[in-house]
Amino acid sequence: MKAIIYRAYGQPNVLEWVDDWPEPAVGPGQVQVRVRAGGLNPKDVLLRKGMFRSFLRFLDREPLPRVSGLDMAGEITRIGDRVRGLEVGQPVFGMSNRFHGGVHAEYAVLEADEVAPCPEGLSFVEASAIPLAGLTALQALRDCAGVQPGQRVLINGASGGVGHFAVQIARNLGCHVTAVCSERNLKFVSDLGANEAVDYQQTPAPAIPGPFDAVFDVFGNYRAGDFSDTLVRRGRYVNTIPSGHSLPAEGLARLGLQKRNRLVIVHSNRADLDVLRQWVNEGRLRVHVDEIYPFYHAEDAHRHIETRHTRGKVAMEATC
Image 1: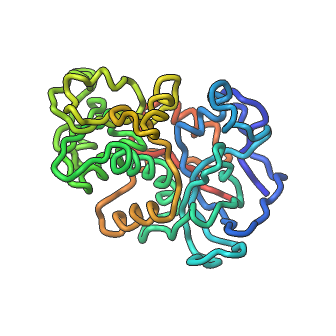
Image 2 (image 1 turned 135 degrees about the vertical axis):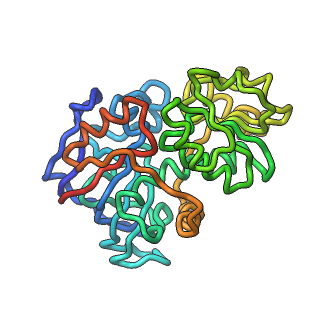
Image 3 (image 1 turned 180 degrees about the vertical axis):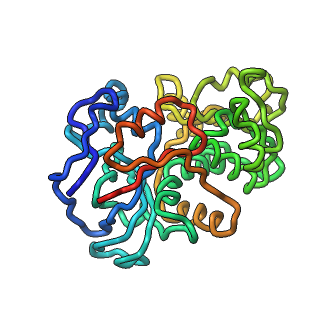
């Protein structure tokens, strides 16, 4: 089958579009999907560069060469034993919980709980752009930050893939949202529902007057201590970047030893995908796709996302 692979770590030019990759077999509890589109995320870039080999080698252990990609949308082509609630031919979207992913190919195999029926009225491209970024935003705000209706939330990096979902999800959870982004994206995040939009070049996130009940620092540009003057006493700082600082803090949080400094470790599951799907169906969550590339131009798509100036999401469309 056709697939986007890399045989070595490095720059975007290590990516290859091949047509002789083995088709994955379906096991019990799994589904095979004919992939129609794939979302692209910063983690795809970090995996391609081999950035996790030093401190997450126990997770990033899949041998090279490997197929890239973490989230996708397409149609179910085969169903394994013990799968309920899904059927062949059904359009689905989802994300692989395998650390390196491996779904940007003609066919992908995922656990049945990692996919859900596609939202109504979306193209495969739009649906593929939701899973990883949408789940990250949902789990960061609902689970890690524990936000409640009426609370004030600061979102730093509000116009990107995760950020533009976070603005909408925080509003859906009943929060007052202060969104931090570049000047050119102020109207964009306001249109998504942000109560306030702040240009980070004029006012850095830690200097924005609070108080805030939660800070979601999407790119991990800061640390919890940087918001000591603006986070309330029981407030929480959440970021998405595993590091020598955030990983130990999250370990302590999971032991119940602290709650203020959290790292969201996204996990794909059908229940949360259904939450996102329902919001889309109700018109309460929309996806903005900044650029669409064919799978065979994966190198260009990776270069685009590496600029870190994407408005919303970058996605790729299968042409096979």
